[in-house]
Image 1: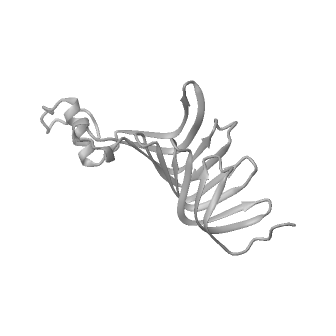
Image 2 (image 1 turned 90 degrees about the vertical axis):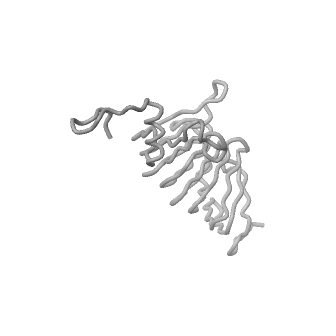
Image 3 (image 1 turned 45 degrees about the horizontal axis):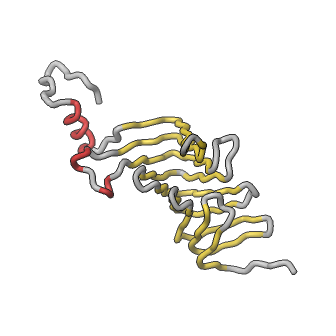
Length: 180
């Protein structure tokens, strides 16, 4: 898509804002970032970093926006969220093949090959996970597999803090040996 008109077309009579609204109606993102790395801070303190192969930002014109239509980032082709720091120093990592982030709700949803790893090396694997920035809560209602130094835990559904230090499997399955 270009900005100039071709010889057989009349120049556009619309303003830039009107053209942007038309692009949104046609289903194109308003911003695309390839091989992006972003660090997020709150009050000057680094809280997380995102490394993604492809990010697309979708938005709705101000006059047409509703609560559900908040700016949305779609991440594809793989990403890693470094929780509690940057790529060199962090408390946990969340990886997945694809995801979405709603700016207004502060909610990240991760899909496909989701992996959450804490500093002790404990690994959570699932197919879908929701991370809520404001409540620092990670949850899923899908099957989960957790690998710890003590063994493998399985179940359906999980609630955890974002650093994956304290977690609860909602419906555990299988058996697990507890030492005396």
